[in-house]
Image (cartoon, rainbow, N blue to C red):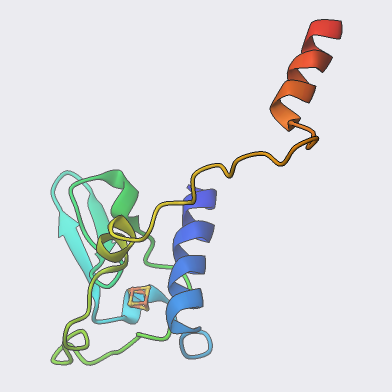
Length: 115
Ligand code: SF4
């Protein structure tokens, strides 16, 4: 969960900047709490789903979208981060090799064969 926290808070803070000093997501109006057998949180700006991958930590550091005001909607046309990442361009296909270029995969395979 620590890596997930670093990834999610890092993503939010890199996209929207850091929140007010000392503020945590628990005080943000965009954090929603679900309660059944246990309590769990989701950030509406990051995106919500029934999956654990969108669970949020209420003690995580706030991002620049932070607001106390529950009447403030997300900016008009705002697309939750996980939705926008679905439509992000895929990483480029592997580029063709230049003549004489060392192929790292072949090199590594050769090392494994030698071992
Ligand atoms: S929008 Fe609110 S709940 Fe979501 S990461 Fe930013 S401060 Fe936390």
